Length: 152
Length: 152
DNA sequence: ATCTTATTGAAAATGATTTTCAATAAGGGA
DNA sequence: TCCCTTATTGAAAATCATTTTCAATAAGAT
Ligand SMILES: [Mn+2]
Ligand SMILES: [Mn+2]
Ligand SMILES: [Zn+2]
Ligand SMILES: [Zn+2]
Image (cartoon, rainbow over all chains, first blue to last red; front, side, top):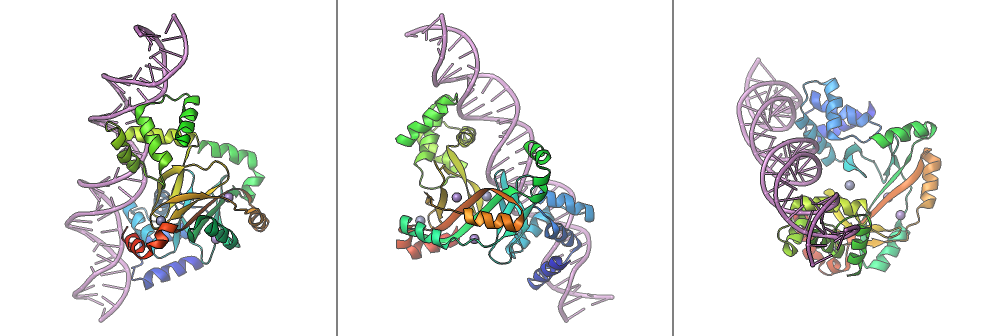
């Protein structure tokens, strides 16, 4: 996999050793279509490397976050899920049906920031934008998915 | 206070009883200039009503959130702080120097949403926007505040 | 092959939040 | 005003996620 090789290289360059548990964790997150909780990463990694410990998952996730390879995704019910980070200026778009999360770009909020700065006296430095919606797949199976979502 | 009376009325209308601990908690949050953690609300409420328990704080915060009177503010380091909610369509602007948080309005992202919908096939339903910057007060004492922020 | 030292998993510790429960008190009705 | 019902309370215990500790292991440089 391409992204995985890149992550491995970044890890090595930062002085990390490449171990089997780390490989498992990296593969899970790098290939995930949705943001995962640490415990989910743990369960999924266990399939590839049964001896893995939850502690190692937490430690590896910390590393990946420090290196800017993954990022926290904020959601209504909690903000402890992680996704591969964007490369440039992008934001997440989360499907409220199935959790599938993609990146989008093209938001230009500079005009808004100017207006806000003038009106409030604040100096605006950063912004955090996240969109929620229904992905194409869920739009097709609309009824089913909405029913499931109410349970979860 | 105006906002406090309104909150009390909403609570009563929803079948809640108005108690001394609840009053203390409400006053703290309704008047706060920045988003507070449950434990902070607890400590501040304790000054007005020393017998208060942390459990009551959690329970009251849940109620206020259910009733739409307060809202979670998401931040880099954690997303467990609460602020009075907006009335209409507004978003938070957080000072990274002192934590002061205000609401702003006037973001029109509909053009962006259309573009994203076309490009991704998602149907966009909700959006979260949060701005970070430096408030007027902190801009005046810029050096001092930045130094402090690096520690925290 | 050896050596250094980063990494590992189990277990214990921590910190935040929730549940349980018996005692209390809000506020509607007599 | 005085009951009475029942929501609310705080202490203590339980739960849950995350972090720390520590001795054993293994990555990767030499
Ligand atoms: Mn942007
Ligand atoms: Mn908006
Ligand atoms: Zn968040
Ligand atoms: Zn400030």
